[in-house]
Length: 275
Ligand code: HEM
Ligand code: HEM
Image 1 (cartoon, protein in one colour):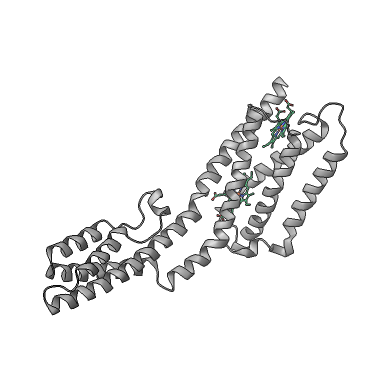
Image 2: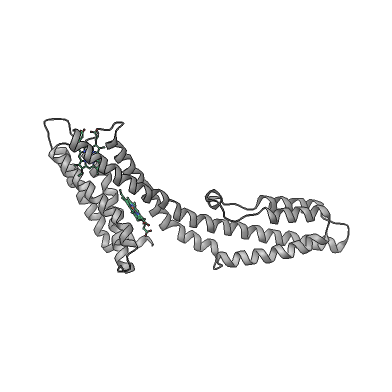
């Protein structure tokens, strides 16, 4: 996915969404119910019905996405509409409620809807921004290739370090064993160089020159390998982080969509039975 979904068919869906929003706003402004504006007036019911219709249609996107009958271009069309009409719900639902918020199931539905929308906006941002950063960060080298190169560097640094002092050997072995790429969700979202490798490089720099000239040369080679390793660690971690950012919001967007649908059923039942 790229920016093209935003300009799809010359902003066709942006125009639809703006039209819906403007009509809803004008209706709200010129509507003068005998009671304070709320979901129970004719306009309230109309906007509520449009809102539910939109939400069910937006949630349907999860099913459309997985249907093999849909070519990519059709999905882009859907996604473009999904984004703009999803955003217009902010107006439709808020005007429907007449700003009557409280600690109740109606406001729960509203809050869940807003969380789904905010997570969707973040997802859109991630889809537009991260693929570009990912390409720049990779510089033509895949994550797998980076890992292969790191393993090769680890092998060589182990060999070199074993020939040097005990302290250097311990530093290098410890840095290798304690440098991780990815793992738990928190780890995946972390970026940065390997702290222990940075410390090992600093310490080896301090104690160079080593007893023999040969050892000093090996020490220098070790530093350059560790520096290269560190750069690869940073790039691999960034790669994992970008990928995680592109996935993580869906873990909010999709489950909260289900919670939203359930709370809407409760909202509608509540207003029909108790209102
Ligand atoms: C078929 C769809 C819908 C119907 C029939 C409907 C009906 C109503 C009614 C009758 C009220 C007035 C209740 C009262 O004043 O106590 C109301 C209020 C409200 N509705 Fe809906 N609604 C619908 C959809 C939605 C949607 C999609 C949302 C947002 C996600 C929503 C959020 C609210 C909120 C926040 C209130 C204000 C609660 C309050 O007055 O205390 N409704 N709705
Ligand atoms: C109440 C409103 C919304 C509902 C119920 C909703 C629901 C969904 C669902 C069910 C999916 C399918 C996810 C999957 O199964 O992988 C989805 C995908 C998505 N939604 Fe929403 N959404 C809403 C609003 C928004 C908004 C406002 C935005 C953006 C500003 C947005 C952006 C996206 C994006 C980017 C995808 C992913 C498409 C893909 O991975 O191909 N959504 N949404």
